[in-house]
Image (tube, rainbow, N blue to C red; front, side, top):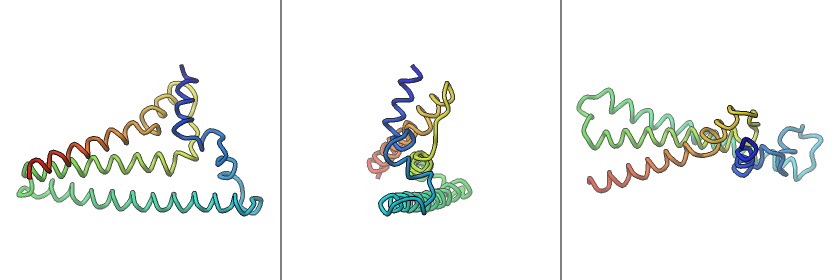
Length: 145
């Protein structure tokens, strides 16, 4: 069963399991050819872009959470829906970062721990669940207005 779970992680994260990209990620740039160096540079650029977007998302949604929680006049049902949406967006941002920034360089441990990490953390389960929560919140907000 563990082999099947690890093969599912290989489908989610082909880079972490000896695909054509993994040989370029851990080598020094001077020993790489032009194509391989560009791939490494693209990975770094993508990681930096995702990291900046995640930090902006976390900062903005944290501000929404703080405004709603610290001001008693802002604790209306609509603003609580906005609070729920902000929290769901923060969870999406965290798990997108894990999947696309950390995931390609991450090697799952074997056994029960690796199975848990694959299923819940890096496999995208939490990201898609939080995304569905965001969608449901948006539907409720649109019906409420």
